[in-house]
Amino acid sequence: MDYMKKLLKALKEENLYPDIRTVNDVPYPELIIEGRRYLCFCSNNYLGLSIHPEVKKAAIEAIQRFGIGTCESRIIAGNLSILEELEQAIADFKKEPAAMVFLSGFMANIGIIPGVMDSFEGLGMPAVNNDENLIIRDYLCHTSIIEGCRLSKSPTKTYLHNNMEHLEKILSRNEHRRKLIITDGVFSMDGDMAPLPDIIYLAKQYNAMVMIDDAHATGVIGKNGRGTPEHFDVEGQIDLVMGTLSKAIGALGGYLTSSREVIDLLKVKARSYVFSSSLPPEQVYGIIKSLQIIQNKPELRERLWKNIDHLKSGLKSIGFKTVESETQIIPIIIGDEEKSKKMARLMFDMGILAPSVTYPAVPEGKSRIRCTVMATHTPQQIDKALEAFQVAGDKLGIIGKVKTHKREPIHVV
Image (cartoon, rainbow, N blue to C red; front, side):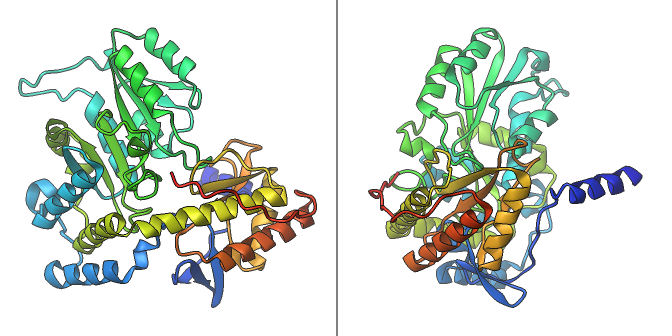
């Protein structure tokens, strides 16, 4: 306990402990914090579906029918018929053979990766030699993937971010091993996308499986919001497509789509699925309704992309250093941890919630304000945020004088 106290003290002294705000109400895209309204530019609720009237109505109907929870694992007595309806709805939406749902995206990854790669021994079951397996992941994969790899008994190697030369070197040196390549579809801190066609090509050349985490792409990326496989026109070519239900879907949970055989096996092999209660009924009904809205109301996604282009072009015209984000995640690189914190606090004082992300969430010296946009932001609200960014940036010496905003063409991915 003494070490824990010392560690907490050091984090606070180095100004690395986050400012955790208590939210009293959520009239997105605003939040009520300590009785004051703040414009939120950090939410993953990209389409605003968590408070959509139809979604809330569906969730209330589920509570009235089933109560607030199943209180049991799916393989015991928690396999409500509506969970199977949800899995079919996800499979249909993603154009995949089958799906399974987890309590969260984190629980999905820590269950899927060992479940796919590790041996399932006993009672005459066919075994694999874990030492002859190899997991190969992108350096910037989400923490849940890193934890899933750590929990696996199979060894892991890391390739440089989106570097296909490095990936091929690893593959070529391990031709005779059973291999799984894992990448994010959209990377959560930089907003760029994995080069899926290249990864799939290499996987076929070297007989490897491919898994993507499409958490930040589902509902947003692709003509119909089906994610990065749709965007790159590689649907049906990826072995394991995982994602979350807590971002654009606006709810809670994680999912996996794959072949029926893989899904059926993981329902008895993925430990975070087998040994957890199932998703609450209100979440299930709400998610099904969200999926229907995403498919029936493309104007929500179109509005989101207009807002993305509005904020991106405004930040660039002000003079901020942004990475080459291709998505709704727009990082403003500050670098210095102290300055990044000050920037976020100045923004907060002006009524804008856009928190700083510092080490250890990102590498030391690469602190940033990680902005996200929602479909429900108005142009006036985005302009208000840009004014606050200009004031804070000028005060901290991060930017020069603001130039006239030049709007870039709308780019719908």
